[in-house]
Image 1 (cartoon, rainbow over the protein chains, first blue to last red):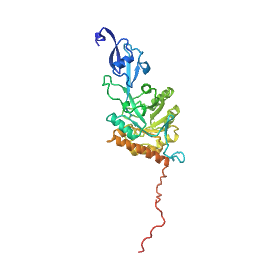
Image 2 (image 1 turned 90 degrees about the vertical axis):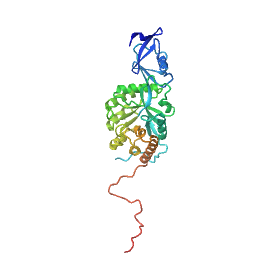
Image 3 (image 1 turned 90 degrees about the horizontal axis):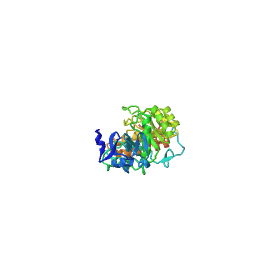
Image 4 (image 1 turned 180 degrees about the vertical axis):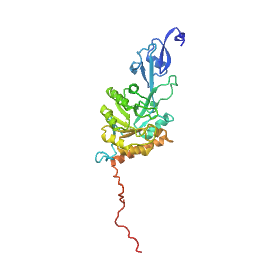
Length: 79
Length: 276
Protein backbone atom coordinates (compact mmCIF):
# COMPACT_ATOMS: atom_id res chain seq x y z
CA UNK A 1 0.00 0.00 0.00
CA UNK A 2 1.20 3.46 -0.82
CA UNK A 3 2.14 5.27 2.35
CA UNK A 4 0.16 8.47 1.72
CA UNK A 5 -3.11 6.53 1.63
CA UNK A 6 -2.63 6.00 5.31
CA UNK A 7 -3.03 9.71 5.83
CA UNK A 8 -6.29 11.41 5.21
CA UNK A 9 -8.01 14.65 6.18
CA UNK A 10 -5.08 15.45 8.36
CA UNK A 11 -5.74 12.67 10.87
CA UNK A 12 -3.51 9.68 11.28
CA UNK A 13 -4.79 6.29 10.21
CA UNK A 14 -3.85 2.78 11.32
CA UNK A 15 -4.15 -0.36 9.27
CA UNK A 16 -5.87 -3.51 10.53
CA UNK A 17 -6.60 -6.93 9.18
CA UNK A 18 -10.32 -7.62 9.63
CA UNK A 19 -11.39 -11.13 8.59
CA UNK A 20 -8.28 -11.21 6.45
CA UNK A 21 -9.04 -7.94 4.66
CA UNK A 22 -7.17 -4.67 5.01
CA UNK A 23 -9.20 -2.11 6.93
CA UNK A 24 -8.17 1.42 7.90
CA UNK A 25 -9.40 3.29 10.94
CA UNK A 26 -8.35 6.54 12.55
CA UNK A 27 -5.76 6.43 15.29
CA UNK A 28 -7.39 6.09 18.67
CA UNK A 29 -10.35 4.11 17.34
CA UNK A 30 -11.64 1.31 19.53
CA UNK A 31 -13.49 -1.88 18.67
CA UNK A 32 -16.86 -0.14 19.02
CA UNK A 33 -15.76 2.46 16.43
CA UNK A 34 -14.64 -0.27 14.01
CA UNK A 35 -17.98 -2.07 14.32
CA UNK A 36 -19.76 1.21 13.71
CA UNK A 37 -17.70 1.80 10.55
CA UNK A 38 -18.58 -1.68 9.35
CA UNK A 39 -22.28 -1.10 10.14
CA UNK A 40 -22.18 -3.97 12.63
CA UNK A 41 -23.10 -1.99 15.75
CA UNK A 42 -25.85 -3.76 17.64
CA UNK A 43 -25.57 -6.86 15.44
CA UNK A 44 -25.06 -10.26 17.03
CA UNK A 45 -21.34 -10.77 16.36
CA UNK A 46 -18.32 -11.95 18.32
CA UNK A 47 -14.94 -10.29 18.03
CA UNK A 48 -11.45 -11.66 18.46
CA UNK A 49 -8.48 -9.31 18.52
CA UNK A 50 -5.03 -10.85 18.05
CA UNK A 51 -6.40 -14.20 19.14
CA UNK A 52 -8.14 -12.91 22.26
CA UNK A 53 -11.91 -12.56 22.54
CA UNK A 54 -13.11 -9.03 23.14
CA UNK A 55 -16.25 -9.24 25.30
CA UNK A 56 -19.19 -7.18 24.04
CA UNK A 57 -19.08 -5.11 27.21
CA UNK A 58 -15.56 -3.99 26.31
CA UNK A 59 -16.01 -3.00 22.65
CA UNK A 60 -15.88 0.58 23.79
CA UNK A 61 -12.55 1.15 25.43
CA UNK A 62 -10.61 -1.64 23.71
CA UNK A 63 -8.18 0.36 21.58
CA UNK A 64 -6.96 -0.78 18.18
CA UNK A 65 -3.30 -0.67 17.20
CA UNK A 66 -1.63 -0.65 13.81
CA UNK A 67 -1.24 -4.23 12.57
CA UNK A 68 -3.98 -5.71 14.76
CA UNK A 69 -5.68 -8.80 13.38
CA UNK A 70 -9.40 -8.99 14.07
CA UNK A 71 -11.91 -11.71 13.45
CA UNK A 72 -15.60 -10.86 13.46
CA UNK A 73 -17.92 -13.85 13.36
CA UNK A 74 -21.64 -14.52 13.11
CA UNK A 75 -23.89 -17.56 13.28
CA UNK A 76 -24.75 -19.03 9.88
CA UNK A 77 -26.70 -22.07 8.76
CA UNK A 78 -24.92 -25.32 9.52
CA UNK A 79 -25.36 -28.86 10.74
CA UNK B 1 -29.48 -57.64 19.92
CA UNK B 2 -30.23 -57.07 23.59
CA UNK B 3 -33.68 -56.12 24.75
CA UNK B 4 -33.96 -52.35 25.21
CA UNK B 5 -33.41 -51.13 28.73
CA UNK B 6 -36.40 -49.09 29.78
CA UNK B 7 -38.33 -48.32 32.87
CA UNK B 8 -41.28 -50.68 33.34
CA UNK B 9 -44.55 -49.10 32.35
CA UNK B 10 -42.85 -46.05 30.88
CA UNK B 11 -44.95 -44.28 28.31
CA UNK B 12 -44.12 -41.68 25.72
CA UNK B 13 -46.09 -38.94 27.42
CA UNK B 14 -43.92 -36.96 29.80
CA UNK B 15 -40.92 -38.72 28.29
CA UNK B 16 -38.47 -35.84 28.17
CA UNK B 17 -35.02 -35.78 26.64
CA UNK B 18 -32.69 -34.39 29.29
CA UNK B 19 -29.39 -32.89 28.18
CA UNK B 20 -27.11 -31.26 30.74
CA UNK B 21 -30.00 -30.98 33.17
CA UNK B 22 -32.43 -29.32 30.76
CA UNK B 23 -35.53 -31.16 29.56
CA UNK B 24 -36.69 -31.08 25.95
CA UNK B 25 -39.94 -32.43 24.54
CA UNK B 26 -38.58 -33.02 21.05
CA UNK B 27 -36.05 -35.73 20.34
CA UNK B 28 -35.24 -34.33 16.92
CA UNK B 29 -32.39 -31.86 16.56
CA UNK B 30 -32.19 -29.98 13.27
CA UNK B 31 -29.24 -28.44 11.43
CA UNK B 32 -29.81 -25.14 9.66
CA UNK B 33 -27.47 -25.49 6.67
CA UNK B 34 -28.24 -25.94 2.97
CA UNK B 35 -31.76 -24.47 2.93
CA UNK B 36 -32.89 -22.20 0.11
CA UNK B 37 -33.25 -19.22 2.42
CA UNK B 38 -33.88 -18.34 6.06
CA UNK B 39 -37.63 -18.51 5.55
CA UNK B 40 -37.43 -22.11 4.39
CA UNK B 41 -35.09 -22.86 7.31
CA UNK B 42 -37.61 -21.42 9.74
CA UNK B 43 -40.56 -23.28 8.23
CA UNK B 44 -38.67 -26.59 8.22
CA UNK B 45 -37.56 -26.17 11.83
CA UNK B 46 -41.12 -25.31 12.85
CA UNK B 47 -42.50 -28.37 11.04
CA UNK B 48 -39.88 -30.59 12.70
CA UNK B 49 -40.89 -29.51 16.18
CA UNK B 50 -37.18 -29.28 17.04
CA UNK B 51 -36.21 -27.23 20.08
CA UNK B 52 -32.46 -27.51 19.52
CA UNK B 53 -31.00 -26.21 16.25
CA UNK B 54 -27.38 -26.26 15.20
CA UNK B 55 -25.56 -23.31 13.66
CA UNK B 56 -22.07 -22.79 12.28
CA UNK B 57 -19.74 -19.94 13.23
CA UNK B 58 -18.21 -18.06 10.32
CA UNK B 59 -16.52 -14.76 9.46
CA UNK B 60 -19.06 -12.09 8.70
CA UNK B 61 -18.82 -10.67 5.18
CA UNK B 62 -17.23 -7.27 5.57
CA UNK B 63 -19.00 -4.66 3.48
CA UNK B 64 -22.11 -6.71 2.80
CA UNK B 65 -25.51 -5.12 3.00
CA UNK B 66 -25.82 -4.39 6.71
CA UNK B 67 -29.60 -4.69 6.50
CA UNK B 68 -29.33 -8.28 5.25
CA UNK B 69 -31.33 -10.64 7.50
CA UNK B 70 -29.42 -12.91 9.84
CA UNK B 71 -30.12 -16.53 10.74
CA UNK B 72 -30.71 -15.78 14.41
CA UNK B 73 -33.47 -13.33 13.48
CA UNK B 74 -35.33 -16.24 11.88
CA UNK B 75 -34.45 -18.62 14.73
CA UNK B 76 -34.22 -16.43 17.82
CA UNK B 77 -32.25 -17.79 20.79
CA UNK B 78 -35.23 -16.80 22.97
CA UNK B 79 -37.29 -19.48 21.21
CA UNK B 80 -34.72 -22.16 20.33
CA UNK B 81 -31.70 -23.67 22.02
CA UNK B 82 -28.95 -22.67 19.62
CA UNK B 83 -26.24 -25.30 19.37
CA UNK B 84 -23.10 -23.85 17.77
CA UNK B 85 -20.93 -26.40 15.97
CA UNK B 86 -17.30 -26.63 14.95
CA UNK B 87 -17.95 -27.83 11.41
CA UNK B 88 -14.90 -27.33 9.24
CA UNK B 89 -12.44 -27.60 12.15
CA UNK B 90 -9.65 -30.14 11.71
CA UNK B 91 -7.75 -29.53 14.95
CA UNK B 92 -8.67 -29.36 18.62
CA UNK B 93 -7.23 -25.86 18.74
CA UNK B 94 -9.50 -24.55 15.95
CA UNK B 95 -12.54 -26.21 17.49
CA UNK B 96 -11.91 -24.73 20.94
CA UNK B 97 -11.30 -21.29 19.45
CA UNK B 98 -14.52 -21.48 17.43
CA UNK B 99 -16.62 -22.45 20.44
CA UNK B 100 -15.14 -19.73 22.63
CA UNK B 101 -16.25 -17.23 19.99
CA UNK B 102 -19.64 -18.94 19.85
CA UNK B 103 -20.08 -18.62 23.59
CA UNK B 104 -19.37 -14.90 23.36
CA UNK B 105 -21.72 -14.58 20.37
CA UNK B 106 -24.53 -16.33 22.27
CA UNK B 107 -24.17 -14.35 25.51
CA UNK B 108 -22.41 -17.06 27.49
CA UNK B 109 -24.55 -19.96 26.27
CA UNK B 110 -22.32 -22.98 26.89
CA UNK B 111 -24.10 -25.97 25.28
CA UNK B 112 -22.10 -26.76 22.15
CA UNK B 113 -21.62 -29.36 19.45
CA UNK B 114 -18.00 -30.43 19.11
CA UNK B 115 -16.88 -32.03 15.88
CA UNK B 116 -13.29 -32.31 14.75
CA UNK B 117 -12.98 -33.65 11.25
CA UNK B 118 -10.21 -35.85 9.98
CA UNK B 119 -10.68 -35.87 6.24
CA UNK B 120 -12.40 -33.53 3.77
CA UNK B 121 -13.72 -36.31 1.54
CA UNK B 122 -15.46 -38.37 4.19
CA UNK B 123 -15.77 -35.75 6.95
CA UNK B 124 -14.95 -38.67 9.22
CA UNK B 125 -14.20 -37.49 12.76
CA UNK B 126 -10.63 -37.32 14.04
CA UNK B 127 -11.21 -38.89 17.43
CA UNK B 128 -7.72 -38.10 18.77
CA UNK B 129 -8.26 -34.36 18.25
CA UNK B 130 -11.88 -34.72 19.39
CA UNK B 131 -10.82 -36.21 22.74
CA UNK B 132 -8.27 -33.45 23.23
CA UNK B 133 -10.77 -30.69 22.40
CA UNK B 134 -13.42 -32.28 24.63
CA UNK B 135 -11.02 -32.24 27.61
CA UNK B 136 -10.20 -28.56 27.07
CA UNK B 137 -13.82 -27.53 26.56
CA UNK B 138 -15.17 -29.45 29.56
CA UNK B 139 -12.35 -27.94 31.65
CA UNK B 140 -13.37 -24.53 30.33
CA UNK B 141 -16.97 -24.99 31.53
CA UNK B 142 -18.62 -25.94 28.25
CA UNK B 143 -21.40 -28.52 28.06
CA UNK B 144 -20.17 -30.61 25.18
CA UNK B 145 -22.33 -32.67 22.85
CA UNK B 146 -19.78 -34.54 20.82
CA UNK B 147 -19.88 -35.89 17.29
CA UNK B 148 -17.80 -39.04 17.02
CA UNK B 149 -17.35 -42.33 15.25
CA UNK B 150 -19.46 -45.32 16.26
CA UNK B 151 -16.57 -46.75 18.28
CA UNK B 152 -17.94 -47.72 21.72
CA UNK B 153 -14.53 -47.37 23.40
CA UNK B 154 -14.09 -43.78 22.21
CA UNK B 155 -17.71 -43.06 23.14
CA UNK B 156 -16.99 -44.26 26.67
CA UNK B 157 -13.87 -42.12 26.89
CA UNK B 158 -15.78 -39.04 25.75
CA UNK B 159 -18.38 -39.72 28.41
CA UNK B 160 -15.66 -40.15 31.05
CA UNK B 161 -14.22 -36.77 30.05
CA UNK B 162 -17.59 -35.25 30.91
CA UNK B 163 -19.37 -34.77 27.58
CA UNK B 164 -23.11 -34.31 28.10
CA UNK B 165 -24.18 -36.23 24.99
CA UNK B 166 -22.44 -38.74 22.74
CA UNK B 167 -23.31 -38.29 19.07
CA UNK B 168 -22.08 -41.16 16.92
CA UNK B 169 -22.48 -41.13 13.17
CA UNK B 170 -24.94 -43.54 11.58
CA UNK B 171 -23.09 -43.08 8.28
CA UNK B 172 -21.03 -40.28 6.74
CA UNK B 173 -22.17 -36.66 7.12
CA UNK B 174 -24.50 -35.70 4.29
CA UNK B 175 -24.48 -39.20 2.79
CA UNK B 176 -28.07 -40.17 3.58
CA UNK B 177 -26.89 -43.78 3.79
CA UNK B 178 -28.87 -44.51 6.94
CA UNK B 179 -27.97 -46.70 9.92
CA UNK B 180 -25.04 -48.76 8.65
CA UNK B 181 -23.89 -50.33 11.90
CA UNK B 182 -26.78 -50.79 14.31
CA UNK B 183 -24.67 -53.21 16.35
CA UNK B 184 -22.08 -50.60 17.23
CA UNK B 185 -24.79 -48.06 18.04
CA UNK B 186 -26.37 -50.66 20.32
CA UNK B 187 -23.05 -51.19 22.13
CA UNK B 188 -22.74 -47.44 22.69
CA UNK B 189 -26.36 -47.09 23.83
CA UNK B 190 -26.13 -50.04 26.23
CA UNK B 191 -23.11 -48.51 27.99
CA UNK B 192 -23.83 -44.79 27.93
CA UNK B 193 -25.26 -42.95 30.92
CA UNK B 194 -25.61 -39.70 28.97
CA UNK B 195 -27.93 -39.26 25.97
CA UNK B 196 -26.85 -40.91 22.73
CA UNK B 197 -27.81 -38.87 19.69
CA UNK B 198 -27.38 -40.26 16.21
CA UNK B 199 -25.70 -37.45 14.33
CA UNK B 200 -25.13 -37.76 10.58
CA UNK B 201 -26.18 -40.23 7.96
CA UNK B 202 -29.96 -40.29 8.33
CA UNK B 203 -31.48 -40.12 4.84
CA UNK B 204 -35.18 -40.59 5.28
CA UNK B 205 -37.86 -41.08 7.90
CA UNK B 206 -37.38 -44.83 8.34
CA UNK B 207 -33.70 -44.26 9.21
CA UNK B 208 -34.72 -41.91 12.02
CA UNK B 209 -37.27 -44.43 13.27
CA UNK B 210 -34.67 -47.22 13.26
CA UNK B 211 -32.25 -45.08 15.26
CA UNK B 212 -34.92 -44.40 17.86
CA UNK B 213 -36.07 -48.04 17.95
CA UNK B 214 -32.48 -49.02 18.74
CA UNK B 215 -32.77 -46.87 21.85
CA UNK B 216 -31.01 -43.71 20.75
CA UNK B 217 -32.18 -40.78 22.84
CA UNK B 218 -32.45 -38.40 19.90
CA UNK B 219 -31.50 -37.86 16.26
CA UNK B 220 -29.68 -34.87 14.77
CA UNK B 221 -30.01 -34.27 11.05
CA UNK B 222 -29.60 -31.55 8.46
CA UNK B 223 -29.16 -32.72 4.87
CA UNK B 224 -31.98 -35.28 4.99
CA UNK B 225 -34.39 -32.41 5.53
CA UNK B 226 -32.69 -29.58 3.68
CA UNK B 227 -31.99 -31.61 0.55
CA UNK B 228 -35.39 -33.30 0.36
CA UNK B 229 -37.49 -32.20 -2.61
CA UNK B 230 -39.88 -30.69 -0.07
CA UNK B 231 -37.87 -29.87 3.07
CA UNK B 232 -40.85 -28.70 5.14
CA UNK B 233 -42.81 -31.88 4.43
CA UNK B 234 -39.74 -34.02 5.18
CA UNK B 235 -39.24 -32.15 8.46
CA UNK B 236 -42.79 -33.11 9.41
CA UNK B 237 -42.13 -36.73 8.40
CA UNK B 238 -38.98 -36.79 10.54
CA UNK B 239 -40.90 -35.49 13.53
CA UNK B 240 -43.35 -38.37 13.21
CA UNK B 241 -40.60 -40.92 12.57
CA UNK B 242 -38.67 -39.90 15.69
CA UNK B 243 -41.82 -40.01 17.78
CA UNK B 244 -42.90 -43.36 16.32
CA UNK B 245 -39.44 -44.85 16.81
CA UNK B 246 -39.32 -43.65 20.39
CA UNK B 247 -42.74 -45.04 21.19
CA UNK B 248 -41.84 -48.37 19.58
CA UNK B 249 -38.69 -48.49 21.70
CA UNK B 250 -40.63 -47.75 24.87
CA UNK B 251 -43.32 -50.25 23.93
CA UNK B 252 -40.70 -52.95 23.45
CA UNK B 253 -40.91 -54.81 20.19
CA UNK B 254 -41.92 -58.45 19.90
CA UNK B 255 -39.03 -60.85 19.61
CA UNK B 256 -37.94 -61.84 16.12
CA UNK B 257 -38.65 -65.52 15.46
CA UNK B 258 -37.04 -67.24 12.56
CA UNK B 259 -38.88 -70.38 11.35
CA UNK B 260 -41.58 -70.30 14.00
CA UNK B 261 -44.58 -68.63 12.45
CA UNK B 262 -47.48 -68.12 14.81
CA UNK B 263 -50.88 -67.11 13.43
CA UNK B 264 -52.56 -64.02 14.80
CA UNK B 265 -56.01 -65.56 14.41
CA UNK B 266 -57.35 -68.39 16.57
CA UNK B 267 -56.28 -71.83 15.42
CA UNK B 268 -59.49 -73.35 16.81
CA UNK B 269 -63.10 -73.00 15.62
CA UNK B 270 -62.18 -73.24 11.98
CA UNK B 271 -65.03 -74.06 9.61
CA UNK B 272 -64.41 -77.67 8.67
CA UNK B 273 -63.65 -78.54 5.06
CA UNK B 274 -66.65 -79.52 2.97
CA UNK B 275 -67.28 -83.23 2.86
CA UNK B 276 -66.11 -84.59 -0.49
